Image (tube, rainbow, N blue to C red; front, side, top):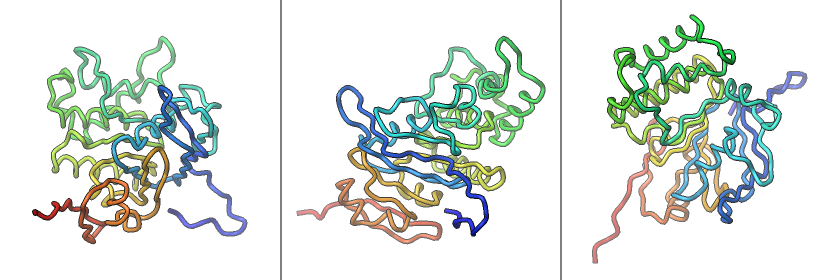
Amino acid sequence: MPPPPSAGEPRTAPAVEADGLRITLGGAPILAGVDLSVATGEWVTVIGPNGAGKSTLLRAVGGLLPADSGSVSLFGTPLPRLTRRERARIVATVAQSPVVPAGMAVLDYVLLGRTPYIPPLGRESAADLAAVHDVLDRLELSRFAARPLVTLSGGERQRVFLARALAQGAPLLLLDEPTSALDIGHQQEVLELIDQLRRDDGLTVLATMHDLSVAGEYADRLVLMAGGRVVAAGPPRDVLTAELLSTHYQARVRVIDGEHGPLVVPVRAPRV
């Protein structure tokens, strides 16, 4: 996290500030008073066992799910004060299973990311098309531009989903399991690209991930959730400990210190 400003220096509002967030779905509490702060330019990844509330938290931050109580602010503005179009210019989301319109070509799908900038009943501008082609080039998807999205492999589609989000030009990127459909090579390719964009363009990243080693390699901070609450938060080496993972995942693991972060290796129980 960036150091605090010195005396007399203006304070920058966090990119994300969630305070006491509570959400109940179908009568079951999903988030039970979650506090979260993400600094501008920071990469924070939320981890935790299935059912911990990770995806629900991202949907609430993105304005896709109303909270029963608590508040969310984006770059200092309370979420309810933002219109849908204003919110779409601030935050872009890559969901786990985006809806793919039947027969839509890759170029047209990525162009949907420019919707917040196109006037009602208007058409995309040359600047919108240039932004889309730039993203397609950066993700090595230009050769698929005319292909129907449904004809691509799972990994290729995942990169197209990311391309649509990046085409929005939003300063906050929400990633819900962004590499779940990718092989290890494309996982690294996509995550390195996101990290490069974060450094070059000042993107703020809030993600969820199941792969703990990958989460620790790329995030500045990890937030461990269990039972709808934050149970640990801090640098990867403070959160990815055998004790915490055993307690909250009910798993046997070995944690090995790596160059960029801890590596978590599952360990089989002793044979009897």
